[in-house]
Image (cartoon, rainbow, N blue to C red; front, side, top):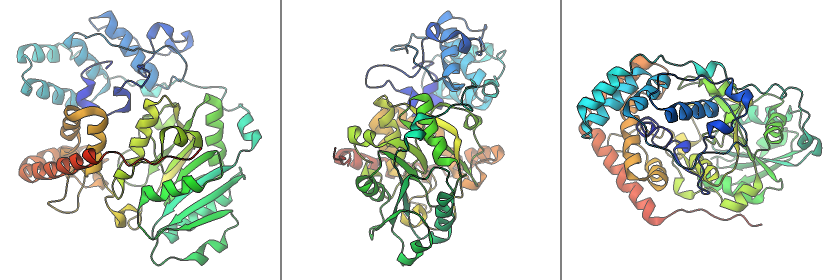
Length: 444
């Protein structure tokens, strides 16, 4: 891809892949609008002119350029020193050293690698995300889509979270956009049907006795009346303009998917790019509005992810490969409470990389199923190296960089157990791959 060393740090990122029409996500630099080019930061220390162009293309996408410029369909090989310069510009020096070590142990010329690593030290870390592309006409934009008043089908699977679901449904009652139905797939035990009578909402209630998240979402989509689907979680809080800002985003960018940002109460720090519009590199079924037609064209959620994680990641990647425009929308955010009971905590694997038992798979098999299916074995292995050592530290310490480093050190002592966990996961993922995808079709 753009810079080949990205495979070590972002081995399974959406943008690492070409889409089905052979295009990449990255715009050819010369075709960018002048007003966008003026907001980019040229790096004169690159040895090759092509590296300078690729760097500016990278910046454009990650700073929030959303347009119709022609994109690259192939990339030239760059000098090693430019690869290291690029990494130093955008990643922590610890990760640059990590790449150096991987290159050396994979039998690359150690003298060339160390020389390039040392000679790239004069590159300063960029703060480019502090100056994103600004869409000044967003505030005054009058959405014709909102004026058309389409029916929205809001999909909420729930499991033993009535306390939090009450707040979710009350937030929906306060929405300034009113033309929506709510489809709740309730898997709770005991099931409380009377709970729903207190809300002044059009609620279509499905009582599902099987605890199965992706089955629940698929069933709700199949029974939905709206041509727009808003997928939501049962432990979230949103503002009254949540629905209208999702619709406005689709209209403003002529997009297919509006991925609202999710701010977690616990876990990793909020990414800087959550504050501005950009092409999204993820799809979160806890907060996303999308056209129903997408499901008709590429199918429903893959049930190979049942009781495990990343079913939404697979669907998002499938959408990306099929050229659907997915916008990360900072104006349709939610607070994700990540409460300590119910949901995936009771159903299966809540955390993709942190098993509760010593001999449980790490990561959970669905993760490696996704990585291997779309990126291949080598990238999946690089993803394991990138993610598994950090997962030794409990989730609540993800914001603490010192604790993450400690996790790397602890993983050395736990190495035999971690290898066994990864082996178990790899074997179970192989079984999933042999079985194949379980993607149902949505009738036209």
